Image (cartoon, one colour):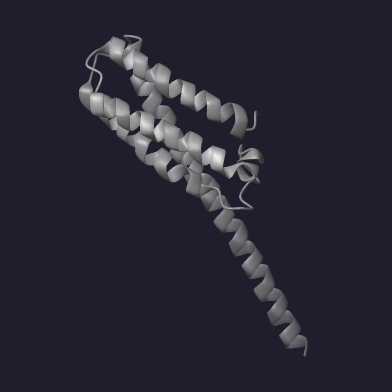
Length: 145
């Protein structure tokens, strides 16, 4: 009887530990995705400001990264994964709007990619469009540190 109690307790602890590790992995994945989006936006901003020369390949890579990550981003928020992150509880209360905002950013990145900016002024306009999407989502769905 004692062995069974110990075995059951150990199994329960292991399952709990596994759940915590899985949650941490989800949070890390979405944070990594957001860091890639931020780096892509920064690369475009540097071209828009004239700090870097126009580079079509860099812009294409940045827009593709933003689009790809934002299409997958809403799926990185399973219920219970809000701990130890900057994710606002509003994400889970209004998931449809959160998904819509991520999809709008992805769609705008695809639209900009299809018409590919040809100079720094075009990149600046693209950064403005993408930045408005980012700000709108962060204002509602990201906790301030």
